Image 1 (tube, helix red, strand yellow):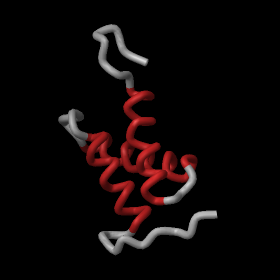
Image 2 (cartoon, one colour):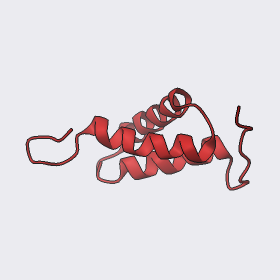
Image 3 (cartoon, helix red, strand yellow):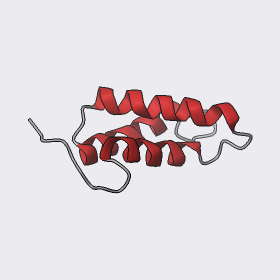
Image 4 (tube, helix red, strand yellow):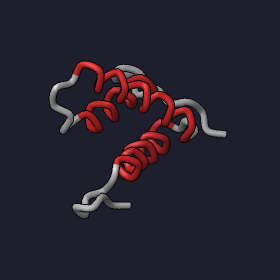
Length: 77
């Protein structure tokens, strides 16, 4: 999954961010993906530089799913 320059494409980068967040938070991938994509879209709206949006979206997704540093995790089934 690379673009013509040999770099990972957006879908690959997105999955690379979402899967570890799902593992860390204990939330299903579809829930994490929804939160992540909403955060990424919100960040893209006002961004003039897009280089680090994936990192920022992942951090904000983690904060939204785990709480702002409280470390709380949902019980796993």
